[in-house]
Length: 526
Image (cartoon, rainbow, N blue to C red; front, side, top):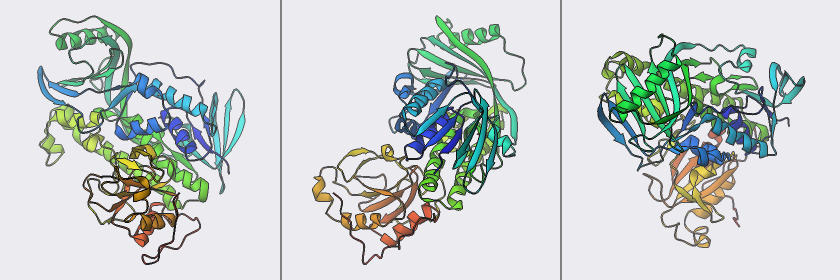
């Protein structure tokens, strides 16, 4: 079968190609550039728990060397501290330059035998038929490419989107920011800061080696920001934070950027898809456009993998747009509802009924990956099976608990995602201290292993000593992208099969008859 063509070699396109390759799907990545990313210290990205785990799984080595985790998050209103948030209950946000993220992903893609990186190749036409997509590029050489599917990850001015005739409506110039990357010493080493003195606002985020990124909110239609004006912003801001005296600093990079909110009308056209900035633009109030693009890639990869290996229903491929477009639209809607209060001095209660939270708390959500502005998305499960309530609602991202596989290895649950397989997790307290040969043949395991072997999608069987809110003998069905599909009280072979079949949306693979609860098939685990 032909490879998947990925147009665009930014973080989203590279992540998608690596995610597909990790599931045995070859890809061709068409990069209109020279294959290098210009270092821009002031252009950074914040990754939260799910996206940082994804980048780690994909082999991005720069996370460790060039990224910095927030030691804490603090907010100030005028000259007074408003709140300080630590990350004792979960992982801290990871902050790194976007070029470092792209370079780490590019290095991983270049080393993978199933990823073919083609530089200096600009797409100028594409055609579709019932079996695939034909793309034409120009550059150093004029070439035709044949793929089973094509995904446009080619940014806000997406050629793929234009060739497909997909509209990209939205709002222009939602926010304007001046930005600077500098090396200096601040009173809160390693801690991120949001300082508000309405209508003024500045955010400060740490990077390794004493480097900081500062963002100043600018009037939407104000004057141009000159270099002298930007230096004045730097000096005045550092002086306020450091007791009235500007500390020595080394200015590394500066810029001015404008944020737009746009959402493509369609994210799928036959065998062609859109992802990342080609499908959506957001970023106001602390939300992260690159991060949402990585979530696009993770959602789409397992569905394309299933289609490539064994055929997938149209409903499953359509669910990419249904899930991801709805999630991004909700993020944009939350920002649009909050912005009048946060930027124009209105009350949060007026725009967000029932909200008694401060503006600083709401803004922290967007920066920290919480609440309607920042939390990882949930996707409505196709079959609402929730026999056992847990801390995770069906459709939500699973907790990263330690799990043990039949081979005896114990790893964080998120480390096992991205393989194109469902995960079935049995909550069995005490297995962490049992010898493997005992729990494999004890209790519910033989019947559960038999039920898992009959599922219509490749599935890994795991055991967890605990899961938040779940009693013993709870069975969790987890999608390949880490979202909880269903929970069961014990082994329910027929119901488990039905839920797994619903996750794949009835893909046209050879259907295995649903097992009977009374006569489960036999399976041997070595």
